[in-house]
Length: 517
Ligand code: ZN
Image (cartoon, rainbow, N blue to C red; front, side, top):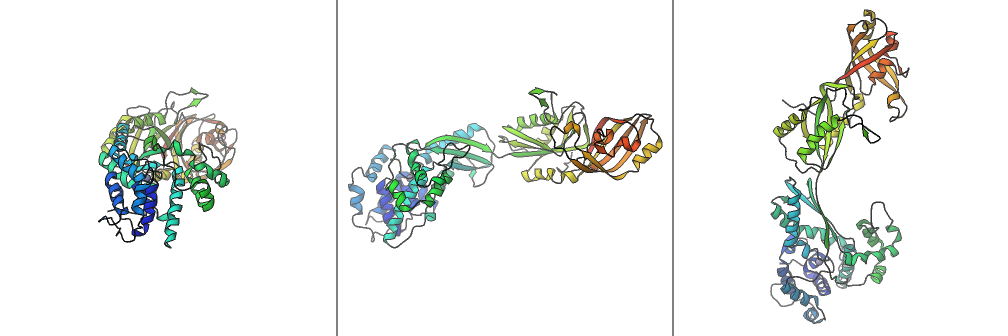
């Protein structure tokens, strides 16, 4: 059953006799069900011929009565008749290439293509539970389809009917109807419209590449050169131009019927890609010689490793990914340790090949990372993209706790420490520190020191515990940064002071969720 409505009979006839494949005939006749497209090519040919031949019994929706009398002659007589050629081609196993789909609904939906796709996907070595199949089609297909639609519309007008372009079945859609179940069967998983795993195919057809070019002379402003596009004839631009062009102008440049190509569309690229996976956790840093991210100046490494590398090299190996993006809730200086429950971080893992990890797998991965004595991670887990944004949200409002070992020039008295212990919600103004001026704009920021507590060590040393607003520069608050932070420990204690050690004790970001050990 072809399910072609009787009113489309002459459209079907005209297309078929011009060298259009039966599947494209179905499309232009607005057959909106997958079943007929999936019929074997030979059967489809048979059915269509039956439909177009009056009095031939079961002709799908055709009942024969309205069929024009000269149809049979038209199909059989003309020189190089496509129907005949298709028939002989059928026996030789290769149908003539369709003038509308350029072979996509013929050769590129056959067993061989499906096998090729399967091998490509299999050899790429991805884990996936379903897939989306995306195709990129050459833009000239739009021109050829427009031509067929105009012609079909003219035909429909004769019987007072209209043929809306939107009712035609898109080539992409028909192609997916055919190819999805075939590839699904091979891969053993469902083709869906949205999946993290994508198989992308790019088709090209050199022979008809110039089909679009006349549009640029008629609709100049539709075709503007764009960066990173090798041709101005993008699908978007061609669609726009075809919406604009007047019917007569189109016919002048692109008369019916479109030429029958000698060659078939080629697959110029086939790629697999898996959407990013996001892994989050919290890290402790125990070393005062370890930067958070690789420290490279003028191409020369200053420190041999980094927190980022110690975490991500394990992740990359296990997820078998192409690349990654590391982010964290703030950062500490190279000589600052991060203690307590650690600092939240997230890693975007780009194009991972392995993605199926259970809780135990993640625990094992965490243990591997924790083989280092410089860092430790906890709460390592897979999260979604939206959750990562959480980490960065309201970062400025969060509080952070620090402990610092401080040296003072004068002998420390009890009153000095009492004074600091009693500080609550101290407002300080910090000019951008000299040490970061090369990468941050000069500005004055107000920050809050929520509380401070002290611990006497000896006459010239004490330990200071601070709870501050995120973004407070602690080192500058202690030594004043040449008076650029006011007030500061020096001004409060009326002595010269310096910071000898600094540790982050906690980063009060309530993410990622804690996991049971
Ligand atoms: Zn076709």
